[in-house]
Length: 246
Image (cartoon, rainbow, N blue to C red; front, side, top):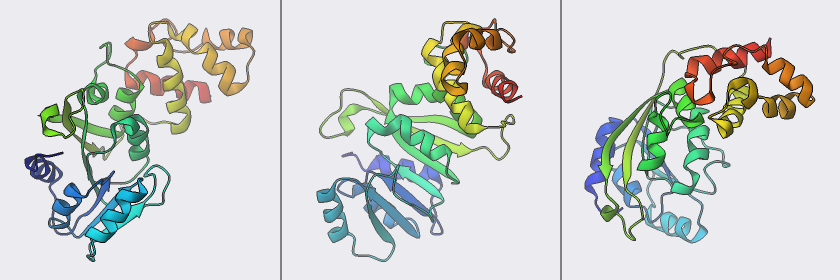
């Protein structure tokens, strides 16, 4: 990112203050980390690349910046309440799943526009998939400022957007098993145009060890069995996975 005005926008959208501890994922050469260090109490700068992490350690010899070497999805992190980051785009899907498992007040991130649209897609839309259902369940998700590719060096092939995630204080529906919910979503959306009674057969076989014949019998008794996957609202998926647990 070569336009520092984006950093100020991200800070404003995150409502950063002197009491905040902020996670910066994929800190790189530390431009955003440096900006954040002047805005908040603590910055956790995570960087996988050893050479870049070494540069960060040399650059930020200050008490309120902690450089963490490693993969953000695997290292142990604690003590942050906000996330302000331009993370590596290739981990976007895995990163949001990871974020949804964490406790935080607000996350402001820059993602590829195409990916960010998947998080806010509505039922039936072309971009509607498992990411949209998970995002709806866990957060209020907002697309904010567009970030043209010219603001990066080297320029990526796609435009980006600032995205804000605010965890919901009250979840929109109850789930008996969140892990099973996510597994079912990922499986079902591989066959998004099929009806539920057909789309869930592989999931029932793989998850519950059912024969294909038994899986077909179970699927034919499920709620929403005549709906197509792409037509299912998040609440429908919640009721569906809870019915499977019964």
